[in-house]
Length: 320
Image (cartoon, rainbow, N blue to C red):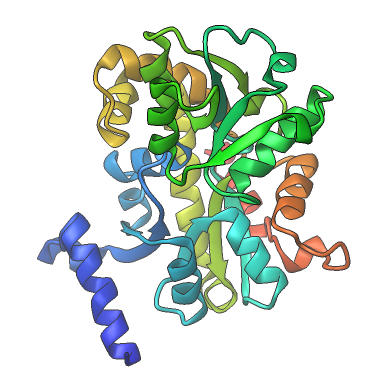
């Protein structure tokens, strides 16, 4: 497929998902295409910033485009899209030569949670049990191994079932086919009323920036003002999300498809502390994600991340 055809496909996907700019906006706002995965709570502050017009205040029209990780990396490399969000796969690709940098994170902790049957009350009782994961060696599996290591449980004492999508794991747990499942908030809320319990929230034991903003190096070099505006809008989105609970809870309900406002309120309260005010991970968190992304120790972090514009955007917001 030619580059022109691929660009047309990208545009059509965006139009189908989010519509086109009105003539007035097209004249005054710069369109910003950003590759995202499914509607995950991890990038909810970005959604809030988009819905509340915080990017338009910067002269930008945010246009999220749903893309799988592999597709988004290819689109970023070929400059069909300027921004993507999947942190782990991006760091792996950057270490292997992708000309890009991680310039901000939306989360400095993961929203994953280990949910268990009612007869399991401690991690030690996972021995001899079956835990549902997505796939062997994937992020979810590695997080489970971190839980087992944290509680000094030999991984050989715990069986795993690779079930792909998290909702398959949820279904298997409800059906009694597994004893526990690695899920993501807010899925545990659907299980609690049936007696299942969240045993370990990964955010309580692991710093891990799951999602962020990754920018092509050419865009970072040639249009730093645009990148800074994107980061400013995203930072304002985090602040808005964390300080206006009652206003954003209905947005969260719609964004991730929850059944009720009560459920959305519970989800918000469990998620609020995964979104960092500064948009920057801790050193430990960065090391964790680099390790999980199998970034070689010989690759210096300045080849992977660049917080320069983020710090400038943050300083500008503090000065106002």
